[in-house]
Amino acid sequence: MDLEKLCFDVQGLAKIAGLFISEEREKFNIEDIIVKGKADFVSYVDKQAEVQIVNGLRELLPGSGFIAEEGTAKSSDEKYKWIIDPLDGTTNFIHGLPPFAVSIALMDEQELVLGVVYEVTQDECFYAWKGSKAYLNGEEIKVSTAASTSDALIATGFPYSAFEKLESYIESMRYFMVHSHGLRRLGSAATDMCYVAAGRFEAFYEHGLKPWDVAAGTIILQQAGGKVADFNGGDKFLFNGEMVAANGAYFNEFYNIVHKYFVGSQV
Figure 1 (cartoon, rainbow, N blue to C red):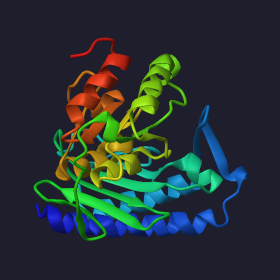
Figure 2: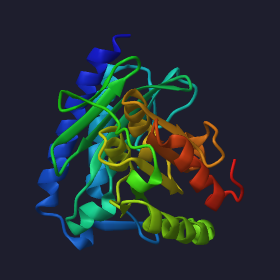
Figure 3: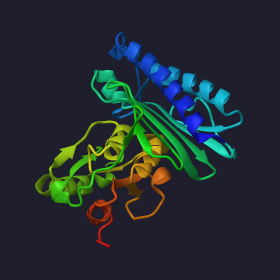
Figure 4: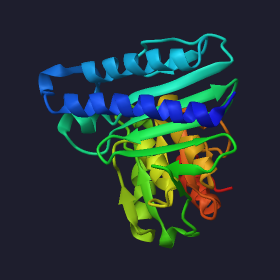
């Protein structure tokens, strides 16, 4: 398989979906919201964008499966599976706030081999494939070299349903507020991951994530020199909802801090 060519084809699909999302934003209103759960929303825009993406990916890679947020396509035991979030940052989209993004990743068995994140509001397309560098709009990107919390700007996400770890969030945020350059909560995990890859953030952590939130961002960040893990330091981050991500120089320190607050003991 020519992953480089496939990646460029996927970028085209992501940008077409992004154009649709951008155009629909101009006429979108609050009555178009469907409530999936408390502070968990979907709209016809998410669903139609996903259908567009799925149809395009089926042409690019016939016989592949899908793990898609809005459930417009399914997966069984296919070798290749697409992991899709047609609109990461739906709440931002609803309120007309940046960022919101299209996120598309490809898995070969259990390995991520391709990722594209198109951040719609800034027209920024982040992408990478297995063995490649990481890119933003055709230019190589790399993680930052900051190696300590005192030099780090950190991104996180707030839970909207998994409140059992709320105290851990509050205590970890208290620590980072005091000891780092600051915390940012943008509302799009896919974008957060890419911003770490591009050196805009040093690190990102969140609980309660879904695979489509972080799959594409994971391979982009890894190819840019970053590291990822779950809150126990393992590789279950994609499907167990926990993500610790940072540049290579800062990862160990950052992981130990997050682990301490969410799991209870430093390693």
